[in-house]
Image 1 (cartoon, rainbow, N blue to C red):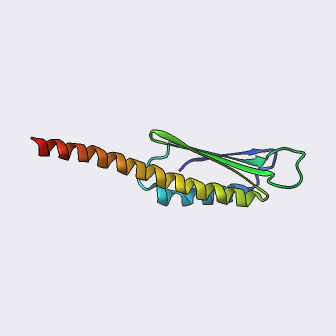
Image 2: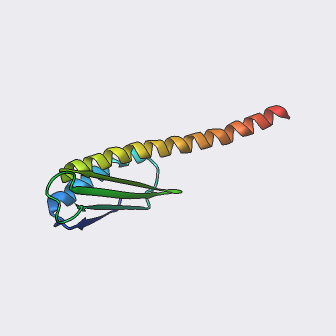
Image 3: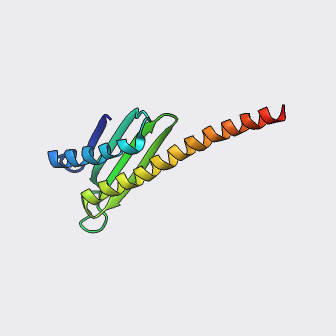
Length: 118
């Protein structure tokens, strides 16, 4: 999966880049045979003047066939924000896959009912 990483109001160090790539690559096992068209990740500070609280933000836009999964999280620690985004994105992928399975089942059920009426 090709991952585009952007840093806002912070320096994008190799450690941050590697951590983001590691977490996003973990999602491939949940994606299975779903082809990812684009994966944009933005990490950074909310603003320059905040000193306390949830000051780090991570946003991921994952473009897959028929949909864009978007998750944004803020945390006190950048790495926690990245972890939370990964966890939430994992749930979104599972929901997307279940929706596709349900659509396929609905289509097959309709065909079976039509055959039974004949």
